[in-house]
Image 1 (tube, rainbow, N blue to C red):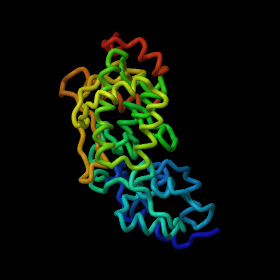
Image 2: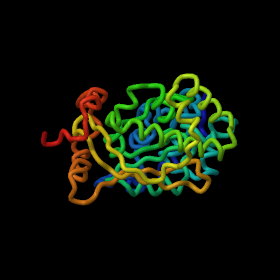
Image 3: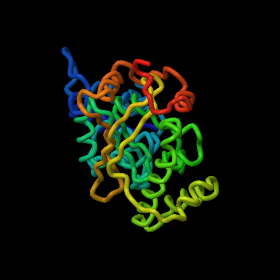
Length: 296
């Protein structure tokens, strides 16, 4: 199966995106007007060979997840995103929410400006849509899964390893905050199929979730002080700030620390350490009692 129109469209969109628009260094001697193929592949989480095949009109029909990733990488507007799906012969409308959702353009533009600040865009069910390298270095990359497990809230109550992100003494507060946030989201969505399925599964798998749900506490997570366990730098104390999309379905999160603070220095070191897995995060979390490993 070939997709020549899809190939031409991808090439045209790639040519118009400047490296600086997506947080990439411009550098000298660029032979293309916009992004290189390997840069688009990197931004979309695809192999360079696979993206090259797409742009040459060859290869298998791309999945909806692949198309969603390409739409984000190429910074497509809503109509352009829909056109991309049609050219790939994906007639089902793209998901309005979930990991395959189209990132709100305004949030994506802001994310592009936060190159040195850990930041990511998530859904109202805490599914990561896109994150910058600084965020990946701070909190890790999300697993490539679908369904309820794509939600960090779901994993928090069903997968013990998810809790290694925070020191154990902070777990009860995080649990309460996640459930209070989900109460608001479920009511706003009118208990649609996605959120109903997730809540049902959480009740089935977690007695802690059920007990907290029955307290009926409500409150969106707008701003929060977090202690994050990093495998190389120990506990990093940050402020997590949120900017909500107009419909409330997506959030831009970014993590900051006061200038000159120990946490600010730790965040600076993240750019040196990057996303390398230095130690086992779960083991680090068990040892964390609030003191940072940085400098002993």
